[in-house]
Length: 197
Ligand code: SF4
Image (cartoon, rainbow, N blue to C red; front, side, top):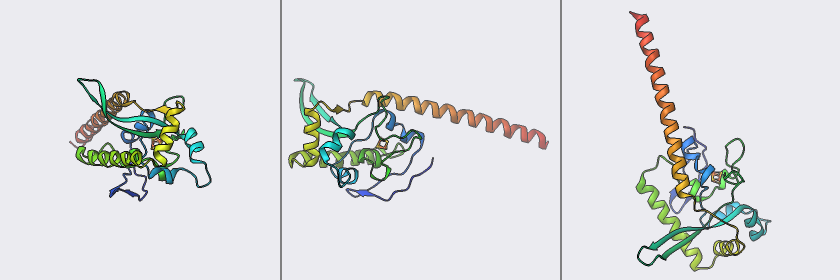
């Protein structure tokens, strides 16, 4: 595991820094969502926010809670997500596997990792839902961008199931790699002991 240290806090949470294979696998299937404050760090000062967003972001339905009896959406907290490359990778994922906007990467990337306790992940998710919800109530820039992209058909998101299956494959591959390493280490240890006799 290696780290990419950048000091950043949001809503009282500290950003994470792990860039191991497991933590970075979402960049290939489900880029992290933005919270409203991410826009200031990502949009260049001289850029038109809507023009910039058309290139870099997509409107996702985000959290949707459906009443199973009526099939009606009872809670909807949309989100802005990074656009994707043709291969499904995040628009900002570089050929060398690094994030092109690492210092200002979206909350959904920068404040989560795969080693975090579930409750901590839930607290952070809850915070993000709250600030996104407020952005729509206040009709802030975040909401304006989302509504514009959505109206223009520039939509994305909705890859949760696919991302979980990909995550499982990565976990299995890492477990196999670790098991091979352990076997090799045990064989070498055995060999060393034999030589010592
Ligand atoms: S913004 Fe960066 S960290 Fe987030 S998904 Fe894209 S490449 Fe990965």
